[in-house]
Amino acid sequence: MNRMTNSLDFQAQALTLRAERQRIIAGNIANADTPGYVARDMDFAAALREATGTQAAGTTMAGATATAPGHIPIGTGSTSELGLKYAAPSQTSLDSNTVDMDRERASFVDNSVKYEATLRFINTDVRTMLDAMKSPSQG
Amino acid sequence: MSMMKIFDISGSAVSSQSQRLNVVASNLANVDTVAGPDGKAYKAREVTFQTVLMGTPDGVPGAGVKVSGITENQSPGRKVHDPNSPSADADGYVTYSNVNAVDEMVNMISASRSYQNNIEVMNTAKTLLMKTLQMGQG
Image 1: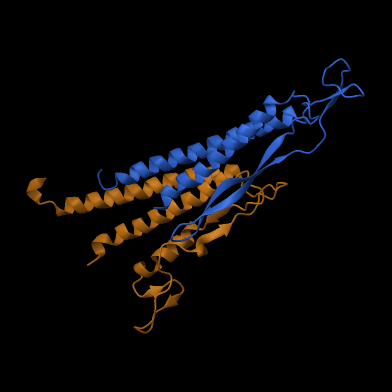
Image 2: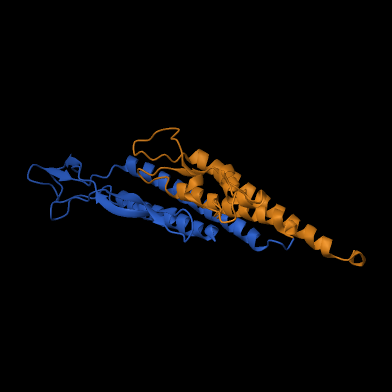
């Protein structure tokens, strides 16, 4: 039934997480001069696994399996604190701020490119579906 | 829509950095100010930044920044021996402001770089949002 939108759902989750990560990196860049600020970043792979864990495998959850119908699924929802980690300072500074601007800029660009890639995947999925819906006479 | 929050976060940083730039400008303008009639010369000012959490209904709050306060540098001002100046004290010394022009220039460059960084973040977020709006059209 939902085979049509399965891939779309996955990409939608990925897009949400990409937007979330973009926001976190923006926060790091905004606080580049704040004393005592500790840079944070998202373990994207883990976050995506957690966000899509329930859908991909049916009844298996992230780290747990539902063996009875009454079991409440865990690991649903797109975002949680779990995916967030603190960045280790590469060059310590006197005001204990751990934002490494080079790394943040690189992560930011990397994340923007991957966000656009996910968007393109979604667009292609939509186009494929629309093409499949057309009758042969429509070309 | 967590992408929209980026404008709040970077916007808070831009306004904080511009306030810092403002303080630098007023310090640099007063680098040669002598003590007024009250005998007190201009004191260099500096801003202090603080992280401010911008809550979202779901998930992790974003980390904006705000100016938590402006402090005056309490170090003594420069004293120059110039007995002929009308603002000289009994010993013939004129007290100038305690602004260090080199410090202020460094501060200015740092502020303007951070400002640019945050503007770029907003530009990227805007581009991505525009592309998101066109999702499914092309």
